[in-house]
Length: 315
Ligand code: TUI
Image (cartoon, rainbow, N blue to C red):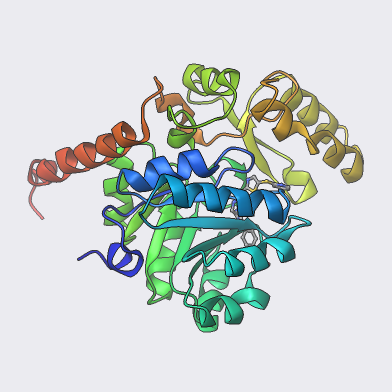
């Protein structure tokens, strides 16, 4: 049996990416009910919001689900306690090093899977004793690292013994197959689940992802040290103009503050931050979480069954 399915008690090794302001109990439960791993994104939300979503998720599914803690959040310490009190079984972390919480979480029986963007950090996390790692390439949406999934996953797989889950740029069954070929035991998918019927993001946001072309998901903020990938709009163009003019980092970061909420909640896809991965160009319609998971599975099977035709040359 697939090592991560066995460890977590899930049917398919497909995680739903934790999208701040977006991935709530409704989406997480829908993905878990479809056999994947649904994940509630704590993002920048306070502990009480996270507690309510965990409670709600338990009423919507009897399958395992996780909570992601965004470590740059001012509420990270608070949320780290909430997941213990609510006896959440699976925690993923992003945007930092979760070392200070690890012992207490694992002593309570929790499975902990940090997200890492480099080999060095993957090794450090393995040494600390985490259960698995999610490795995210720069193709992903939101706050991103430098390396692509294609080069990062095999290097991390060679460097650690714990299970590796690949994230960033996994847009369909072909990407799923490719990640497994690179040595990952599973995948994490954000942008595709953003357009799930059960996803409560504003309809304008979904429509912008559905309309996006291959080159529309651009990274801004490399100069601030906090690059973020989102769909091109008035906000990204203004940000890029100011970056070129070498405007103060503090001025730039002010533009980002509140911009994600504006896009997700108010549907302001002009001035807001429409965070999205590079696979947005592959997305053509809204589907249920179950239809999305089924599409990854049938797509995976289709390419695997053609694998002998692919090597139609002598080695
Ligand atoms: O975290 C993400 N993606 C995100 S978070 C987010 S909301 C946000 N709010 C305020 C500021 C910025 C973003 C939107 N998208 N992905 C996971 C991720 N983690 N990508 C990169 C990393 C990462 C970076 C550094 C993980 C660990 C790390 O460690 C540095 C160190 O050595 O501590």
